[in-house]
Amino acid sequence: MQGVVNAASQRRVTEAGVAVNEIISIFGSDLGPAEPVAATPECGAFPRSLGGVRVVKDGEALPLLYVSDRQINTVTPFLGGIFEFHVEFNGVPSHLHAVSEAWTAPGVFTFDGSGTGAALVIKEDGTLNGRQRPARRGSVGVLYATGLGRLSPDVPPGEVVFHEPPLPEASRPPASIGGQPAEVLYAGAAPGSSSASTK
Image 1 (cartoon, rainbow, N blue to C red):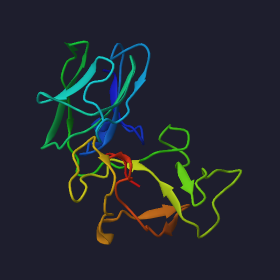
Image 2 (image 1 turned 90 degrees about the horizontal axis):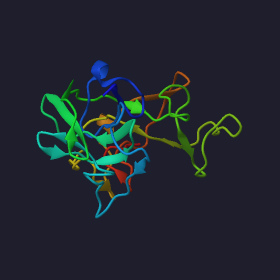
Image 3 (image 1 turned 180 degrees about the horizontal axis):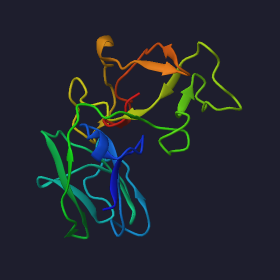
Image 4 (image 1 turned 180 degrees about the vertical axis):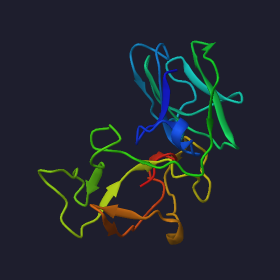
């Protein structure tokens, strides 16, 4: 393995730690199939084996969102101090990789997927925010993040959330746009997505 990062911010988890329900990207070579495979949920949850790949912690396979020979996207489980895991491809395990647990390790998904620059924001009309058609001042936008920690009530990592109550107002993270405070109307799991995605 060459590195493990927060899938949104692209920040190495060795710097920030890893939080429960965080989507992480594992980079390396010969991690999985040459032809990439994107997962689709079955029976309300993402698969634990995909394209001959498993990511395993303490004997338990983790939910997989995407696998290829150079990248794997998975969802971190409930931890307990250290996140120690290995990758298996066609039954052959990699060496163990260990990362410290963090209460939160937030990352916002960005427009170009680089982890920097403009956030990926969906406007009120369902279109993407952008320079050509920016959101109007005072309108509502939706952005997506990962690494915000445990949900309340808990949702098992990798399960698809259909109806999730928002986080209590006191628990909602502060937000700013262009250095100006922004009102957070909702913070919680994104309905219809993995428990790792919040908005």
